[in-house]
Structures are given as structure tokens and as C-alpha cells.
Image (spheres, rainbow, N blue to C red):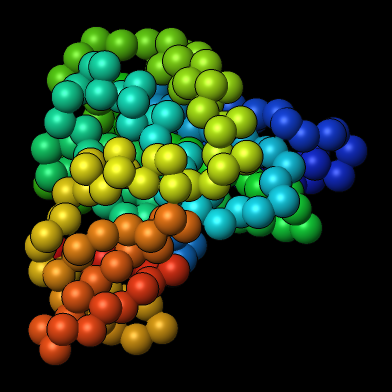
Length: 213
């Protein structure tokens, strides 16, 4: 993503940068992300006027492709991809003056550090697939879906996203501008998480992370 930002100063979007290895991979809140050879690591750069719901939308084409190879792929709001309860990938979206930088990391055939094996998984544990084929399929799926999102926003993908959430109708703890405990009941047309507290209040959360579920 750092390289993409530099290239965007003289290359007009859209474009994609793919790498075999990242030495400084990062996730949400600048958490480190192991990015060894064998995984799929890429950044997409697109121009966008209204970025509301982008980080949740972009998981849909990725989800559709991965489900072709592992049916139990699911989503953890807002930007994580899970398989059988373990993290398979993640999406990091940054917006700068109408340009979106979408970083995607998916464990395909990369070795996982020992300390992550209990919580993370690679697609190669379930199927034998070439990472370049996965990328090609994701790009083709986005070519179909992205124009819909740019025209109509996230609302057309809301139900599909919701149906693939791993914690829908479950109690969660969300770390946002404050700590919120409640039951996930929905997502909004902008991809916000909607949580019902024990007091019956609805909290609409635009940014945050799920700490327990």
C-alpha cells in the first residue's frame, strides 16, 4: 500500500499492485500482518466519490470467489475473512482525496507462524489452488460488481453480507469510540454494524473492531 500511494502520484487509477512478500504487512489499527511467500498480497487503487460501505462491499467479490473452493468461508465485520472459525484473510481500506487504496491479504499457501496457527488458516489446508488464479477470479468478479456499488452503494449487497456474518444474532464486544456489548442484529445500507444492547438500545457502529464473539 505504501508503494501504491507513491505510484498514485503519477499513475492514474485504477491499477493493482501485487507482491509475493511483504516485510511490513499491516492490518487494522496498524497491527502487524505476516505476509510470507505463498500468500496473496495486493493493493487495488480506484477513484471513488462516495466511499461509504466500501470496506464491507469489497469483501463480497472476494467472498464469492473463496466460497468456490471452501464453502465455509465467512465474514467478520468489518474487514476480516474467516474459514472454520480461523482468520483466512483481511482487507484494509484507506481513502485519500477521492482515491481508495484497498489492501487485501489472503493466506493461500504461505507458512503461518507458530503463534498464529491456532487462530489463522491457509486455503491450502482445504484445497490445492494457485494464488494467481484466485486473483484473476477476484478481479473478474469485481469488474461485474464494482460498477453496481459505485452507482447504488452497498445496499444491494447488504443481505448477502449479513447472511455471511459469523456472529449475526450473537452477543459481541465491540471496541469503537466506546466499548459496546450487545447482540448483532443487522448491518446498515452503508455497511455499519447494528448492535442491540441489553437495555434495548440500537448502536450503529461505523468504525471499530470485534474483540469477542
